[in-house]
Length: 300
Image 1 (cartoon, rainbow, N blue to C red):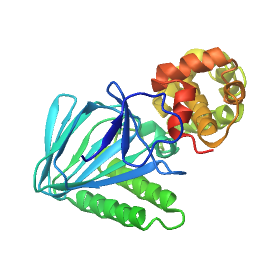
Image 2: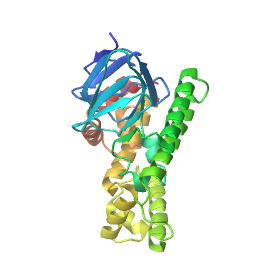
Image 3: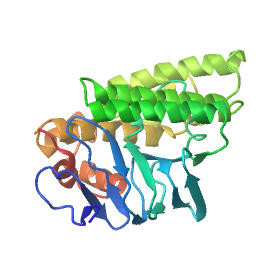
């Protein structure tokens, strides 16, 4: 059997190597300790039913073909072709006899938080199918092969080096496919707004534990409530409320994984204030409780 599946989220302790963790169609990707990048190689015929996860998924076919269905559209990925599936996108795949592939899975928050990535975040929320043999296609294939080599060697800082490969990949995708999505920075109004929003993001990062409101942060930026909301969404791809929530969730997830702090302390230190609010928001966004999340990913 090519894999084993855990369908309940009440299994105590770390999940063993080779298991998939599913709750309905939601998959919780299991990573090696102290990492958030995963590589799977397989030459075994197998079918993965439709599912989704918070990780970006990249398929690079080594031999033969792999079939994907993403959002009702079917893709057939041949040797050396690449398919990039954005996070939280339902998809299924199958591979027949005589084929092999690499499957890359990684959490994209670090990359998508880069200043020049935020205005393009909506542009990356789609499938990229690289099959034209262009310079970009070949360069990204070489970058992915570099990530394979680093992952398999497992030398010091391998997780960081793999992420640097993913950053190079997204830079090439943005330069090739997303030119013109954002107005040029030489437009003075856009440039000033961008600088103010960047300062605002720093302010939020320093004060996410506080009782931040839209009015308060708009006042800090020197904008009206309406103009700030519109400008913030244009530059980050998120509403202020969603961005603040995601920031707090990321802090909470880090605390759940890397510390044994109580749920009350995690809730307070991540800015949720109360355990009840923390539990409700966490479940709404992650489809599991904080306790279940720690059971799956916790390394402390």
